Image (cartoon, rainbow over all chains, first blue to last red; front, side, top):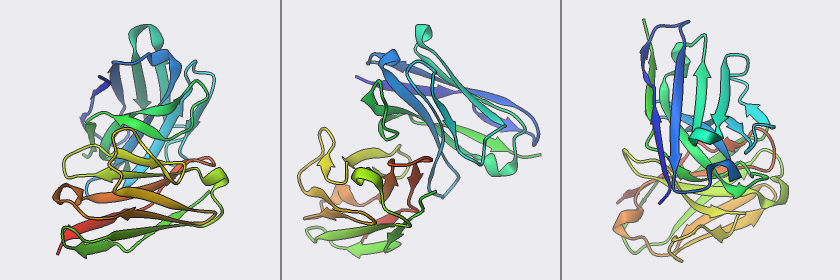
Length: 122
Length: 108
């Protein structure tokens, strides 16, 4: 059974940093691209960032480019999101999501975690 | 950057009725790389449809997707009680991947 478990969310002041983690199990982690998708309270879904199976290809939404860094550790079956210079508009539930297509990746998502809430407020 | 617009915003229907949800793209979606997700309150999204018309694993056949280019449709042939939820379309044919704003299907 595929499981994705996010952690690391919390309340943080504007301008500060936070690091999210996602622990994956139930599939061959290093075969798949992985992504972060966020959802502001009461709002829709926004893709944040994605990373290929071997970290060779990385993408970011314009809204987080230069502030957020995605990474992965295939030996630990883990995905990370380093979030710097946080803003109030970054407040959201952050989901870890698995790409449906192995190796090449396709940037759509067949398994999601339950999310970790990030609140940016003074 | 492709913008997806979903309509209607809310659809009020009764169990057993047919639901038709629309997703329109601001420019053509490459190779019909269009997915649909269902999200219930307090839950993560669930993949329903990919490639505009292919059902994901375990998705009942009352869910179907169609369309190409800029106009896509999700149809639920007969609404079951568990189908009342918010539905999102997502394009993945060009970067960045983008979601529509969602359509809420509520019980009439």
